[in-house]
Image (cartoon, rainbow, N blue to C red; front, top):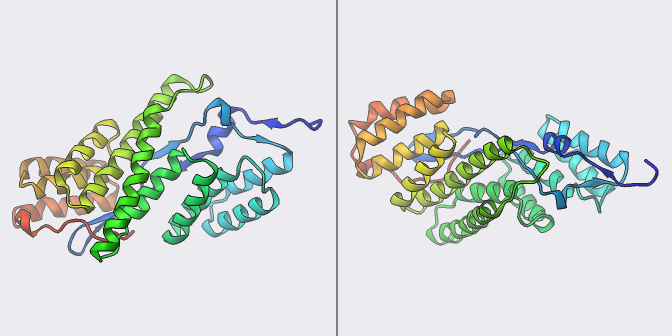
Length: 282
C-alpha cells in the first residue's frame, strides 16, 4: 500500500455497514408481548466521512467484526479492534456492531452505554440515535418519575435523529434509487420510535399520527399492530381491525398470531380495558 491510506469504495463500505435495525417491541395488552425485527437499513455516510483504513491489518480486523455471526464473538472482536486500533475511523462502526450484539443478548444496559460511546465519535449517526431511542423507550421502569426521565431521554434521541434525516444529503456515490429506498425506511423507523414514545407516554393521538406515517413510508407488521392498538384505544374499532389485518398479512409469524388474537378479542374488549404500553420483552 506504499504507506498511503486505504480509501474504501462506498459500495464496499455500504456492505460492511449493513445492519438489522433495531427490534421494536412493546407490551400493548396485559400478558400479550409483541416483538419483531424491522427490515434492514443500510447506513450511507457522506463523502467527507467515509473511513480510510491506515493498513490492511486494520481493514481485515474490521472485516472480522462485520462478518461475525456470533453476538459474543462480535463483542470480543470489537473490543479487540478498539484496543489494537484506538485511532481508527472505523471505531464508531465497530461500536454499532457491538450494540446489535448486545441487543441480541438482551443486554440493554450495555447497548445504551455502547451507543453513548458511539455518539461521542459520530454524533449524527442515524443507526445509533434510533437504537438508543428505541432501547430506552421500550424498556421503561414502572415508577412514574423514572419513566418520565427516561422517556424524555428517548425523545431527545428521536428528535435528534429526525433532524439528521431531514438534513441528510445524498452522496454522489450513492445511486438515487438506493438512497430513496434508504430514506423511506429510515423515516419509517424514526416515526415508529416516535409512535412508541407517544404510546408509552399515553399520547394516543400522536401515536396514531406517527404510526400512520411509519406504515405509509415502509409497511411493517409490528407498526400496523401498534397502530391498530392506538385506534382501539381511541374506540375506532373498524380502523383497528383494518390495521390488525395488515399486521396479519405482513407478519412475521408472532405478530400475525398476536394480531389474529387481537381481532378476535376486539369485540369482547372496551377501549378502557386496553392497557397502555408497559415494559416490553423480546
